[in-house]
Length: 250
Ligand SMILES: C[S@@+](CC[C@H](N)C(=O)[O-])C[C@H]1O[C@@H](n2cnc3c(N)ncnc32)[C@H](O)[C@@H]1O
Image 1 (cartoon, rainbow, N blue to C red):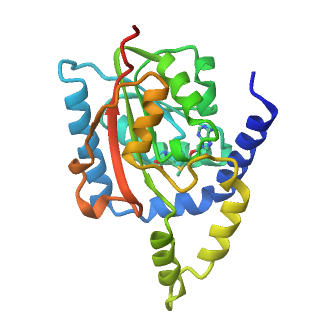
Image 2 (cartoon, protein in one colour):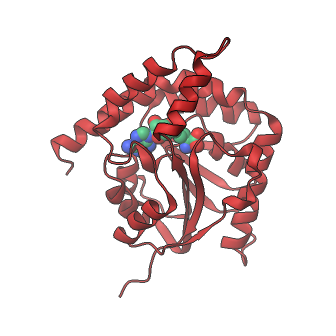
């Protein structure tokens, strides 16, 4: 059972991302091919390390797929991807993206905390830029742990999205001629809508992510972000990609 407060928080976050979906889609439509290729190459290498002795395609669950950036990359690498997101607007864009790229991605409207209802196990769960936006990340991680097959893993990508310095720089850029003058208004509106609903609205560092992993029964894992060249890193401080597995039960 989900408490009323958590349900309200989840609804607020979903509504916020539904509203942001068109801009998010535009951002990734403008993303250059070389940056996209760099992400795909990085995930290919990471998966080669995490699943060194495996040749068959992986069953992947991409939580909070958004407009399908990572889901389609993983499908291009030959994996069987189930992409979930509670935002229907995001899922519409994700389906369109898979269609444009000519890959198959199964999309399901489902929240991060509800993955048990998918009734399937996965070799790999991925969550790129999602953990920070969840009202109860430990509950979500515990739910993901339950759907990972023995020998399977979890790949998190995240960062610090809102620091004074970082937001200050973006604000300054938005005020320049040609900048996005709506930045400050949008930042304040997003904070008002979900700042209180999410315990990590400012974002995550690898240490904070590892504390969440420890609290939910995962190993602390290894960082892989060095595999991504600087030009493909997102606009966040302390960006990281962390690969881990469920910890052994005592
Ligand atoms: C910053 S976007 C990241 C999208 C995508 N993973 C990517 O890498 O581009 C955050 C995503 O998390 C989704 N999200 C929000 N609340 C969620 C929840 N409770 N469960 C799963 N996803 C959620 C949003 O709808 C949004 O698509």
